[in-house]
Image (tube, rainbow, N blue to C red):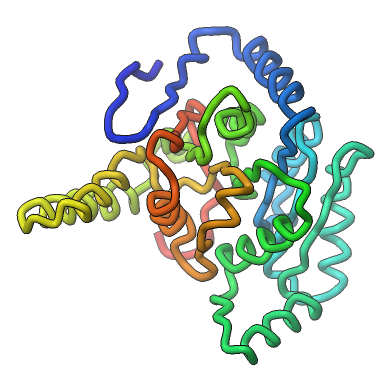
Length: 299
């Protein structure tokens, strides 16, 4: 079980539930979220590559778990990497299992002609649109969600989580969806240990991001740049800043600049720092272990 300590400058919500029965805790959590959903409209945004649909041993687990929750008001799939209309139709059919009479479902074809035409019109007006990828897909899907004006809390996670558990979903949504809290942003974190390879993951965070942030905070302190030192100390407080799971209020989403190219996760943390009081920011320990399907390429 994790510790009880509150370190850094934001609230950390530890995995204290691990001392209790998992199924009983999940049932209580989801019942609580269902009660909140009568007053708070929660939407889940899923950036998904078309190739992930061809990896059913991972995505089936995710969609099957999501289909069992009853507290989501809507679901938006930001579909990337689909170059043909037949692929878009296949994706719509695959994700249709997530639709219910109480929950809306929208699949946004980011590479489709309608969205691409919007991008071209924006470029004509010299408005940057970023580059194809997760950031651009989330940027476009958030624009759609906010234009609907029927959402209060937006949650986001990836579609390549091998160790997915709907407990993860409920835990990082609850802090911002609970009207008894005062959190506007909640970031998830977790251990990164591969159960198949028996190795530690998260190398980019451990070997680059954390040492870099520590070095920058030290340099800013030595040179007397106190505000920049606080900025880097803020980033250092997050246990896993590159985690793709977070939830935030729709009001906050309207006021921040979502990165439409690279660095969505770190850029979002920076925007939150600029816009939100630190007491309204939390991070939460989600699950015992996290593993995602790694992209093909060199080790």
